Image 1 (cartoon, rainbow, N blue to C red):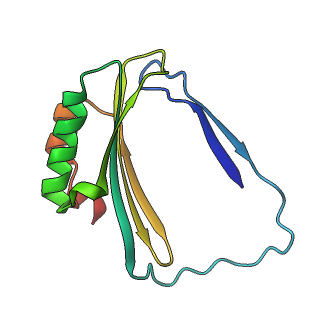
Image 2: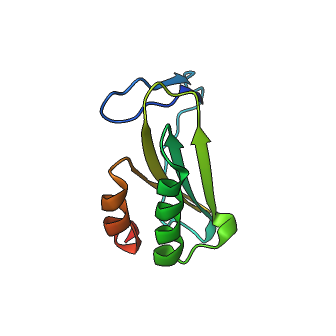
Length: 121
């Protein structure tokens, strides 16, 4: 499977485009994930388009505090190619056997008040 993002889109106007290519499996076997395994990495990314970078900085600050993230576990992306204004916060947690993520595209006041350990429990 290959996936690439052609352009970002933001709620409510949309406009995003993701291309996914999937080839048939040659030897299909059951997938068994009995345990997630040890933590490998964590990354919180805030993306803003046509909005103040201050929004993303505030969101990342809250996530650093609530999830006890180090500076190198956060990333701010100023996206310039979208037709619309918007922002999104993504948190990826990678383990030996699995990958867990949260994607929020809500007003930054709601993200500041609601994202944190509760979302990953």
